[in-house]
Length: 463
Image 1 (tube, rainbow, N blue to C red):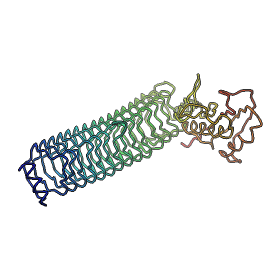
Image 2 (tube, rainbow, N blue to C red; image 1 turned 90 degrees about the vertical axis):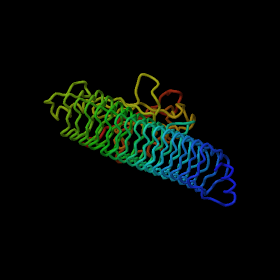
Image 3 (tube, rainbow, N blue to C red; image 1 turned 30 degrees about the vertical axis):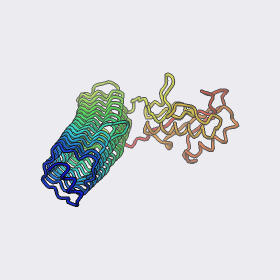
């Protein structure tokens, strides 16, 4: 059968073309909705812009075919689509169960609500693909690319990738919000800048993965393998990482505020300059870890192993180092606080310094950290709101809150503005627990702003 005969019979109402031989056929820009091409040979066929809605292409051979068309609700289960071109194809609700898409091009395709269970996407191009609520259980995405494309990122939010193979996959910048990656293989995957908020990574393999700047707030990493993963500068604050394997991982500059590492493997981990304030390290193994300049204030170190670890003060922990000595090291810790949510320093100073459990926050003025420009030039009340927002961002980065502030200093250009400033300032403190305060009128403030405020906070020890 050739393309002309198929089209003629289809036009007359026939729909069943199971097993037809149409290799290399030109079937582009046609409407073949509801057609049955089960077990058909469509190798190298041109189906560009063809409508195949609800078509049955199960077990069909579509190797190297051009399928840049409309395949919504089509059935392609166990079809062979290796090296096929599905770029920007409409694949909403498609059934690709067990299909072979090795090396296929799916750039920009829409696979929302698609059934992709057990499908093979090895080495496929999935850049900017849309996979919202897709079912990828048991799918093989090894060496696949799901990266940025024309400033659009792959969307796999809420997809089911249970036990999926994503080893060495490029997921740079991908949206994996609330995605289920239970027991998934992400070995050597690139997850830089990825959105992993509330993602389920239960018992997943993230060893040697690139996770710098990934967002993991409220993610479930229980039992995950993170050996030699790059987590530089990552925010894992308040996550439960109990019994997680982080052997030789890089957590330099990471925010680990109140994170639970109970029983975790942190051997030979780079924790240089990490924020471990009030972290739970009980029964964790930190043998050989680098904790240079890390902040351990208030951390739970009960039964933790530190043999051979470089401590925050630069000393190597010996066999007989006692918990009392470790606690003393905690108290002596000095840490520099930096956050992008507050204005960057413009001179030889830092946003805040923690020393002996005290947070010393540099004076803040009404600079918007997003633009690094002065805002509300003549409105002292709005300037005060921006100042308080900047102070709050720095306090939060240091693991503190307004309730822990013990002293503030307000610098005013005009004391007549005090009432307006005080009205805003008072919204941040309860009267009975308000900190000590000084208020000073000065002749001039940086960048001619109307108000500047600094503060000192005392971290609570909840260990």
